[in-house]
Image 1 (spheres, rainbow, N blue to C red):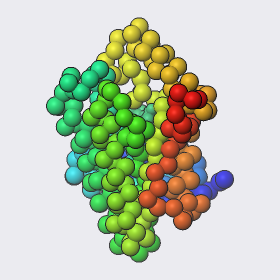
Image 2: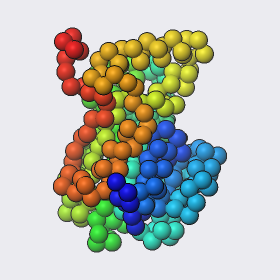
Image 3: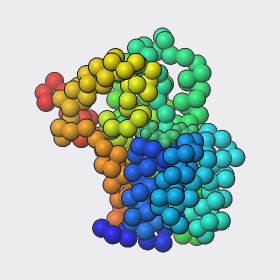
Image 4: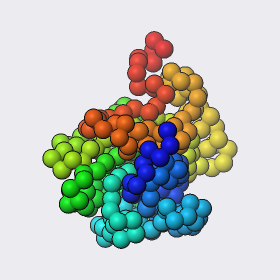
Length: 266
Ligand code: NAD
């Protein structure tokens, strides 16, 4: 597939790293112009510089209403409209062993970034898409943590479950404007977010936890390798382009089959 997004304008939140960065690169390679919206200025500027005129970086904290409006305005001013929004930015919380140890400031921040962020961006982007008369596409990046229960990371799990429900509900709400809304549900993907060093464990401990978690995932996945950011980016491309034109309100797992069966019988 080449030029699947020719002439399209996209915003990708969290576009400076991980899954977002892989998606920015793929969308530009497929002909889109992309606004990279992220809080990591250095990485975002470097990526935009590498991609040339087809990409622009803007410092955006998705939990800020003003920033959410500014990124939509930038897409319209720089590229003449907006066709695709990928609500990808997200954060996890500390690796607390139990909800009894979860911290309230973590709860506030995770909910603001993972739930309020996509809601603000969707509202601002959908207004532009509806007024253009051409409709558009909105993608949300949830997680299997929003589908599968477990102990630990409960705030994160709750935030991603909320995002899945928001995604399905906005598909219903925005259909009348020709806007399709779909949700991606990644499993275990090799990025900073899934690194235990990022969650506060020290070097050795982080490496050991990571090894253990990988082993558990791989034993339960049907596809026996860890997910890479590009695996998710390919699905985002499919959902952003015309090949998925008859899909909306979908919740699509990209998790190597980890949620398919009963792990006891794998
Ligand atoms: P990542 O940490 O590599 O990338 C996340 C990006 O979002 C970073 O560039 C970060 O700077 C940006 N970001 C964080 N907070 C932001 C904010 N407030 N405003 C704007 N940008 C912000 O992580 P990733 O794994 O690529 O995560 C991308 C999405 O995928 C997240 O929503 C995450 O929850 C989801 N996800 C990841 C995994 C995984 O295993 N890595 C699994 C399931 C779901």
